[in-house]
Length: 203
Image 1 (tube, helix red, strand yellow):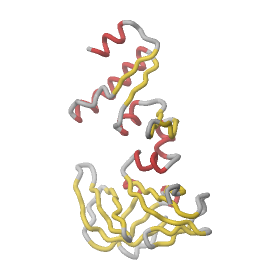
Image 2 (cartoon, helix red, strand yellow; image 1 turned 90 degrees about the horizontal axis):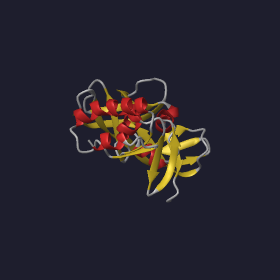
Image 3 (cartoon, helix red, strand yellow; image 1 turned 135 degrees about the horizontal axis):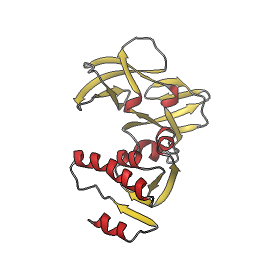
Image 4 (cartoon, one colour; image 1 turned 60 degrees about the horizontal axis):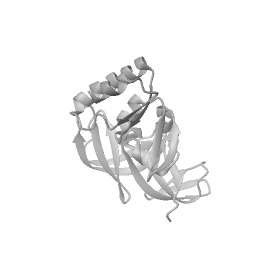
């Protein structure tokens, strides 16, 4: 009703502040599509405020990511998701694991492993690896991408996929896959361009 009243006066800009936050998850997913269709039909510039990352990516033509009251990144949803400009952006968008690491020359030292690295960061770094970018393989398997030795400690069934918690060095890495992987040693593989490395400004 509030949205209908706002549209009656034909505003130049429409502000929606967490409009779906109190709804059931399934209802919220259906209404995302309706909100986007409505906005396109009426053609009113809309500022949509939400803490739901999936909702922001699904609805927006342009995402403005805020942290502590400051704009940290602006761009199309796919650009902001695929090329996060900061540790906060990489950590906030998607489910990921943070590691402390160090870059020395052409090597990235992280979780007790040394990986090839050709990026710009140097010295102390923060490494973010998203759970959807990780592949779990039998220990010793050969393949493409950076490999880490890990040990599956726990597995959760989340409906469409399984989330594995894998001990890599001192860290617990999250890894998603459509099929379950049993507890025990594994090779954790990540494509080099999916390992996001940022200079650690706090160390």
